[in-house]
Amino acid sequence: MTAGWKNRLYFGVRDREKAEIAAFVTLQEPTAGMKAEAVSAGFCEPEHFPGQRVPRVQILTIAELLEGTQVLYPRVAPGETFARAAKQKKESGPKQASLKL
Image (cartoon, rainbow, N blue to C red):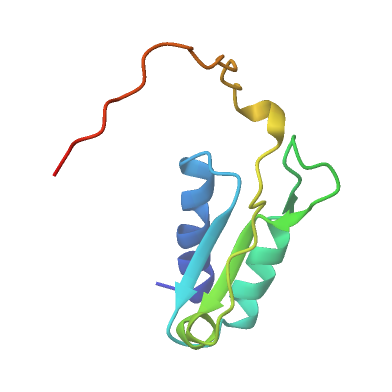
């Protein structure tokens, strides 16, 4: 199995799963071919985050993860994504009785 074929196999999973982004974690430094394949996947610009481009395929080593490097992706959802609950008025009814101990 050639290195190029392995790269296409690994990175093709993102396409097969219809994922916008993918992270590939490796013990060793990525090869030049792996880096080139990742760059060729381009960038993702999420619909709700115009201007926030993130690489579609990101390669991280275990050492980088242990040093605190994180996968890049939009971390805050826009407000219109979630429905807001209706505000409720306080009821002016009887209050809870206290217990005598």
